[in-house]
Length: 369
Image (cartoon, rainbow, N blue to C red; front, side, top):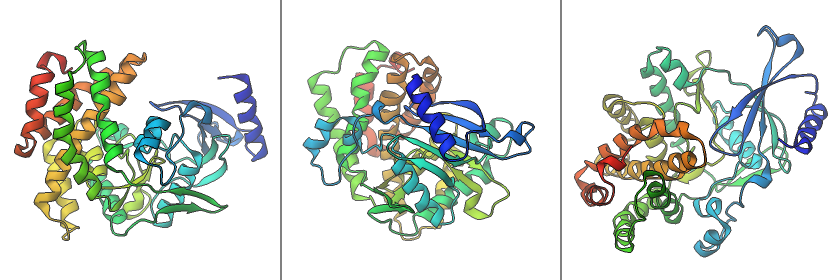
């Protein structure tokens, strides 16, 4: 970190009354964000308050999608605009947190923020990450049921076009449209051959890929009716058993939220690239969701779920795991076999036969690792 950035962070903490806190690095993730836990002087033994300090240097990300931008304009602006990612925007985080909290859900309280500098101090929801608790032996069933109940609550109403928070902060809730789905899924074409040592896919293979995925992306956009977290999985959910109902699920990393198909967050939750979710748990949770949504056609919903989950798995294998591994983060390779298993499970759906044939022809078994 540059001394200039550290000076700005220290000044921000002092300005907002946190200059006397002990700072504990929590590292970052696959994004350009990093986090620290702030401890008050009396919390050395765990008895006092702690807070989360979020650092998102704005200069490290490409520009976001302007509302109303054409497809060509978005592509010219770069991946964040084309895929409708928030580029870690503090405004997006603050406005989305306010929307979630207004609905009785457990997004962190924002204690201070500086949108232009990319800094914020948040409520600390603790260390009870779903992934950690389940790995330590806690029964996953009630945790997943509560996480599905959050989805049911969020999908009970049509979200606004603009999310707002006190202090005049606002952020557009854009649609997870065909272009955003396409550019994300297409990252498999760019990154997987480089990682797996394959030749670049031929023009014929790329044309077949586009034709096979196009109906999936169109269906994905046609179903964009609900607020979608977009990264809804066990490492972004915190168990808060002292709270009630859906508020028992602490929500993290939601700044990329969009209006999307109701299956989207369920694909992240139930086909989690970072931990195994059994087909039995997946099926039970889909049953729970659909029982609360009698307005949905079950067969059509499951078909969309499988198709979007396959698209998401391809995106994760390309943009997230292969790209990160090639950029010097080999830890992501450990998640690849699981993601391939999810992808192959989805491709067994007879409706996905064409895409299964494409993968069988273009990505041999030894290149799926």
